[in-house]
Image 1 (spheres, rainbow, N blue to C red):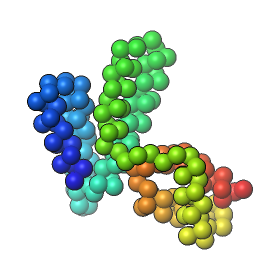
Image 2 (tube, helix red, strand yellow):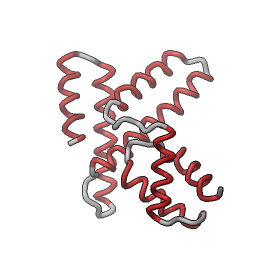
Image 3 (tube, helix red, strand yellow):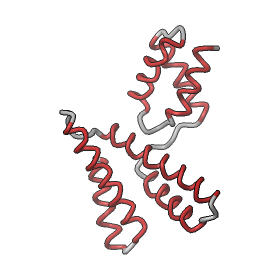
Image 4 (cartoon, rainbow, N blue to C red):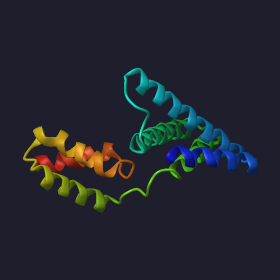
Length: 151
């Protein structure tokens, strides 16, 4: 379904002659195809929507890192281009959870798994990934899980 949305958006961008959106969506399609090929090489089925969300989040993270570097290097035009790409890609992610919602989800996951210490962190993260793919930054969430389990 997410693939269809992206492909339809490519057609709309072509009709609207929106070059930035078109090039970004083509790049997204290319990244998805490469990830599918990778999965097939490992004997896995094509990526599900949840897997695609993870791919999109990774693309956004890469662009955010590039923006930082471009800003530090005084390359405002390149930073602007990356920000525009982030905006286009973000449109295909579900609404991101607030910090309070993330903390509540972590507390619920800890209760659900019966996690008692750091050795159970993997279980908690697995539950969060299953329920909230694309809705939270798991880099930040893992720090919060670690704090919750050690505190």
